[in-house]
Structures are given as C-alpha cells and as structure tokens.
Image (cartoon, rainbow, N blue to C red; front, side, top):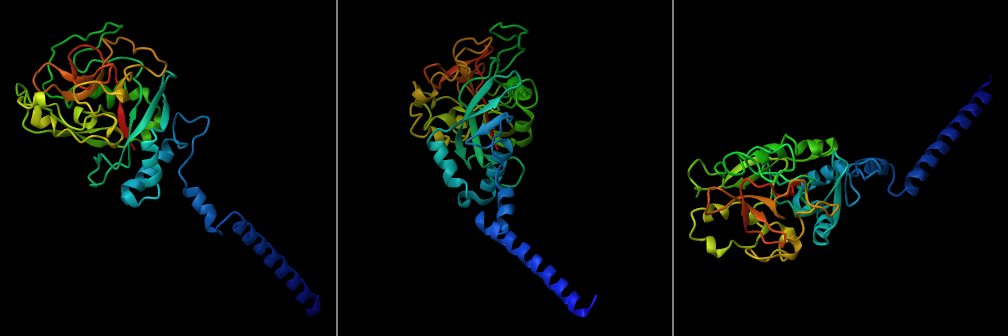
Length: 323
C-alpha cells in the first residue's frame, strides 16, 4: 500500500472513532447530566418490584436501607430528610408480606430517633411501626399454648421487664422474627431500647437499661407526651419516664396518657380486619412494665387508651423496627 493510501485509511478510521465518541457524548447529554448519569442511576435506592415482600413509598427493603444509611451518616443534611419527614407527616403506609402470606401494613413514626446498637453513636435513619397486628396474639411472659387458648401458663411476673420477657425472645430470633421475609431480616437495623428491666423483687427499678433489638414494642413513654400524674407516687414512675421519648409521628396525634386516642384505636386488629388468633380482649402490647405492680405489662386498649395492663393473657402484637 502506498503512503498516500495508508494515510487515507488512517484518516477514515480516525473519523469513525471521533463520530462514535461524539455519539456517546450526545447520548449522555440527552439523558441529562453527562457520563456520570449512569453511575448516579446505579446509586439510586432500589424501588419496589412485583416480587418484593417489603415496600414503602416506592422503595423495597434494600432501598430503605440505603436511604436510612444516608440519613444516619448525614443527619438533617441528607438528601432524603425532607421527603421522609413529609411521608411521616402524611402518614404514608407501607406493607410487608409475612411467611403465611398475610400483609402487615406499617407507617414511619420517627426519623433519626433511635440509637443504633453498633457503637457508632449514630441514629437509625428510619423507624417504622406496624399499623395493624400480627396474625397471632402472644403472651408477654409464660408458655404459649399450642391452640387458641387465650392465656399462657406459668408464673405471672414482670421481673426482668422487657429484657427477660418471652415475647422479646420470640421477636428477636424466634417464631415472630421468622415470620418476616429474608430481605427484611437482612436489612433491618439493631437499635438500643431503654426499658425498666427491674431485677427480681424490685418492682420500682432504679433506672432504665438498654437492650439491643431488631423487633420491639413501643413503650408507654414513646406513645404519650407526658406521663399520667396518678402514677407519680409509685416507685416505677421515674424509670417509666426514661423509656425513650414520644415518637415524632405521635406528637399532636396522641395527646391523652390515660384515656382514648383516635390514632391508636383498632390497631389490635389484623390487616384483614379480624382479631388475631388467641387474643384475650382487644388490647395490644407495650414493652413497659406497670409502674405499681410486679405482675403486669402495659397495653393499649381498643379505644386507643395506652394505660391498660395485662399479665399471662394473650394480647395483639404490633411490632416496631428500624432501618
């Protein structure tokens, strides 16, 4: 090949390469933002698909974890802070498909509220709570029956509090935990929950202590704006006040600490509108021990009153969790 022909071939090859590069650049600009756009899209939180068992505001469990991590690392400066605050105020609902095929609706109750248990000193980005009850009712303590008998067997006591309760065991590695899909279990965060975990015989307790939990029950203090004055003379009142603070969602919505609250009514029912199997009266559990009695834990009544109490009877389970 002569030098002249060789130069012509090189010229055409260079032209084709330039045109190809120009086409790539034009496409990148057309999709908005240049070559970095594809990377940015890959970093977006995963959205819900038809096969996802967890979905909230268009995001699946992996997506919620990514958003929560960004919130945890960047606080109120996170790009997701404003939208999640808006979702909380608007009471946007999500849904989890449990192992029996039933649905568990849930809502956002706190943004940057709970302390992570990983030693980082950071807050969990998102805290959620079920809107309805699990399909089955549980005792807080004692041995569960094998049928729909409405009470458990065993000694009725709240010594050891939430920390030593059977229900906490079932929610953090037993029957209740196993009802949740794997994608939920892979992404949910472990947080520290403060509770009156009084020792044997000391019904008052001296101070709240922390447990590490993946699923938990809200405390009386996390529901109400102030504690009931009638319990001030009881030994457990001070410790009851140390069991967290009212979740943001409940501010202005739960105003009564010893009477009914509309937002809490009917939460003992399942998503289908039925009562959980084995339930004894229409109450759902809190994790707080009764401040005056060594036999009971507090419950929320069907009318949304958060001051009821129970021992070995089976009540509805309305779990909370964080990402």
